[in-house]
Structure formats: C-alpha cells, structure tokens
Length: 479
Image 1: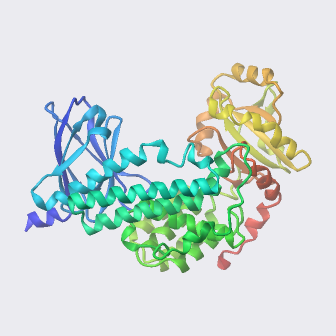
Image 2: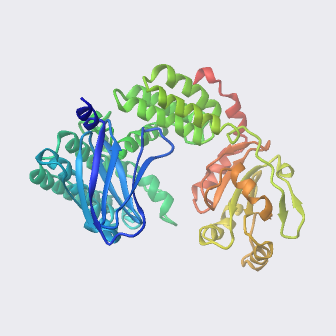
Image 3: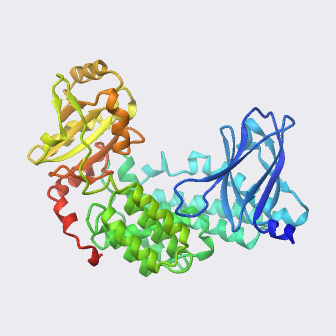
C-alpha cells in the first residue's frame, strides 16, 4: 500500500549532468497561491554528475529547477518520474527530459521538453518579449506582434502534442498559458507603455481594442488553468481594469474594496478564492490596513478558502500593521547640505513626496532630470518634494548637490549612515530609489507612489492634497 500512496503525492527527478561544479541542484515552488515565500528542496550532485530529487506534489505544480545560474521551469504532476540530462554550465540550452520509468511517463517528459523549447524560443528571446522594444509599437503594430507570437506558440504546442501525447492536464495548462499571456499583455499594454516609454503621452486606443475580452471562454475563465500564473495575473488585472472603468482609481479610498466586490461577483470555482485572496494581499501590501481587516474578515467567512490560506493572510496583515496608510511616518534624523537638522515634523501642513536614493547609482540618477519639471508643476501647491540620500559618504553627496547643474530643486537631505539600516527597515526599503507619500498631518498616505520620472505623478500629487481625511471617513461596514 505504501508504494501507490507515495506515487500519488510525489514527483521524482533523477538524471545526469556533465561539467558540474560544487553547487547543489535546487527545486523551488509555491506551496499555495497566496504564499509569500517559496518552498524548496536541494540535493548534492555526485562527482559523476548523478542526482536524485523527490518533490512533494499533490496536484499539478509549476516549479523552478536551478543549478548555479541556470534555471528551468518544470511542470510536475503527482507520480511523475523524469530523467534530466544536460550540460550544467549551459543547462537552459541543453536540458533534455526522458521518461524515467517506462512509457507511462513519456507524456511528462514531452511536456517538460516542450517547456524548455518554449523558453528558448519565446521567453529567453527578446524579439518575442514585450519589453524593452515591442512596448514602443503603436496599437496596430503591437497587435500584429501579439498575433504573430501567439500563432507560433500554438504551432509549437501542436508539434509537441503530436510527438509526445501530452496529458489533458498539461495540454489545458499550456493552451491557457498561451491564451492568458496574450490577454494579459493586451490588457496591460496602455498602462505599461505609459510607464516605460519616456516622453510619450498615453495612447488613445481604438474603440474595438478591448473587444478581445468578449471572446468565448476568456472570462470568467478556464478553471483547469488555475495553475498558470498568467491566468491568475490576467484575472487580477482584469478586476483592476473594471474597477478603473467604474470610476475608481488606485489612489481612491474605496479602490481595493471595489476590486474585491467586482471579483466576488465575477469569479467562481477554483479561481475565486485565489483572486480574492490576492486582492486582500494587495490591500495589505499597499498599506490599506483598515480595509484589509474588513476584507479579510469577509474572505474568511465567504470565500471557501483553505484554512492555511486564511492563516497566511492574517500573519501577513499582522506583519504590516506598523507601516500602513494612516500610521505616523517614522521620524528620520535628516541633515541638510549645510549640516542643519531637518525633521519630518517641520514639514507638516504640506503633502510630502519623499524619495530615498543613492546619488552614486544610475537608478537614482535617472530620476534627477525630471525633478525640476515636477517641482515647477507643483510650485503653487502645498506639496514638498523631499529627496533623502542614503549615500555611504556625506561629503560625496554634498559634492553632488553642490555641483549639480542645473541646481537641484526640492528639499535635498541626507540620512547619516548610522541610521540607514533602521530607516530601511522602518520604511520597508528593499531597493533604491524608493518613495512614500506623507499626508499633511505627517501620516503615511501612499506607500508606493510613482517615480519622479513618471509624468502622471504630477496629477497624482495634486489629487492627493487633503485626501487623508477621505481615508479616515470611509466606514468599514460600508465596504
């Protein structure tokens, strides 16, 4: 009895790699859709290049298999047994899967060989990616590109199915992944183009552009495709699209409750608790703690979600209580270029857009040319643009400020190195540049505002003046 039970709850990978080093072979996967950390297992590869790896799998699962810098996407179903062969330093280009235990596992090998070929042709080929170049295309050219890519993806899948007799589960996953990659890229095209193509106004799309949303089977969706990240991402972005179409904006106090209610009415079966849970998670991560508390209570009572999903959301909410919209902004011991102290409390009465940066690095430097334009646009508004430098060396930053031509606008401040680790933790800074928006009363208003280089930031800041009171006025029992 033990053998069949094990076969239904695991997948086995073994094989032979050539030119191996000292790294371990690592497999990573998401244990559930709302997890914030991946699960993983690692094994040593023998000096001869042999390995055996058993992965707990109770349902079809996407995982990442990596050795050193090489990483493969694999699709595992309960009971799969696979042999992997390849050149370790070039595993992405050379990986080949074989049936590890007779003809019964040939469909699994065919599925994973298809994924590797798909990655080589499309995922790892910039010609088929939206960024960095294809997003610059105008509407007609962009749609031609999407159709061209989708046709070739379908052709590759049909070829793989003829060769390997793919399982119905994998075939459904692969077909849905192609369909929802297309739909996701088309749905987010205008927003992504506005964010990434400098100096271009937002496109005015043709009236029929969104007609693809009425295609049969796309919405509310294909439930067997719930394994596909693109399927989940598309449904989530579609809910955001509908919320904006109803007149709500991401900066509106009722935006996330609106998203939740839209998803609740649209979705059913397996996708419903996944997408509703992701909206709750977004609400938490964007700092809307009061809203998140109300939505999580509703989710726990009505979403039919597994208990461990609800427990994870409750843990995440508890972890984000102190850095949330409406909480006092953590004070910072700032210094101006002349050495004088500056407190956040002294800026109360105005909206404060605060950007953390390091003057030595290109990512922050790229924002500086847009600073003058932003401050000029806000010259008659009760808004302060505060640049907080996290340079290691005070004198280096002072020289940067003093030598800037044209002179830097806004308020230029420095955070002493001895306080930077504390500030990074308090403000949740994991990369630079990073920004937050403070309300006139010194509370946190937006934990993830747009970058200075984003032209819509000007309108966002003008609309945010006085908005803190609206957040506090929203009655939770009306959400």
